[in-house]
Length: 400
Image 1 (cartoon, rainbow, N blue to C red):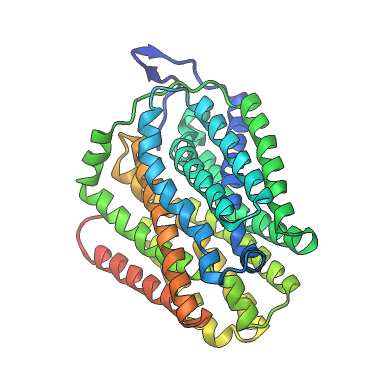
Image 2: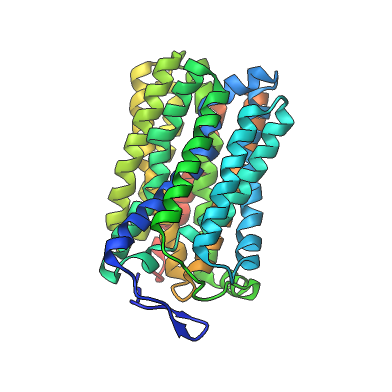
């Protein structure tokens, strides 16, 4: 991944990036993605609490995960194209303001439909912020630091699991799930202030148009990236969205143990993120295939070995390492498919990733309500096995 010291904006040169200001800006974008990821997956740890408050089933409560993904998939191309000529810093701040409103609305919602309304706002934020922020590293730091900056930005995904979800779950247990969402709203406001102070003006370098996205979709490499993303994200979220009901019903874990398991899972995800970030550029097939294989192993073994606390903890750690590699691996496939259009590639990455998150949560919820939490884990494992086969078939071909 390369970058230049000055970008062309409508025929003019934008100011060169300041190394001193670049890294605080990178951290600000990372924290923006952190609060977005944490808000998106926060219901996973609070699923049963929220469901009991409004007397809805765990599968129905899973709509809190389904709705943001579908909305993000729609918002990613539409919002990015509609705001193509606006300063990207301004848009990042606007999306975080919308996220703060969503969190405060969820915290105060007297009815479940208002909680779902807040999740619509979360979906719009995800689609817009991710599409812009995921590819900003090359505009914030010198070329030799772009790889490290990208890894830092994407570390927000496992950090959301290791810090956000367990902390939110703990707050939910101690003070109620509404307090957890209110706390996320306050944290989002703090990150918004940091973005305003640390991120320099970012006029659009090249406007993303629908015809550019259509062109990418006709490319075979882009379609392969879409298939990989669909399979691995479907496998993960069909199962992981309902890991709390599984730990409660199958492992018979206490609330404290569930919080600990989610914490260990997230810590393992951070390790997986940086291990993958160091190798995925050279070995994308190996990293993607290994991640899928480990997810398959963990989810298929959980119904048997996850009945005991030790087995559940160990398998969740393996699962965390595997999924930590997924976002950076998926983004790498899209970047390699469209090196000439980084923001358009980020739009497709965001749209496909988020649409599949919601699909996985929806399918998993239907199966959970009709069968069992163990069946949901098996579904995720079988889907991950299918991705391993797809990567293997690609590896057997001539194309890289």
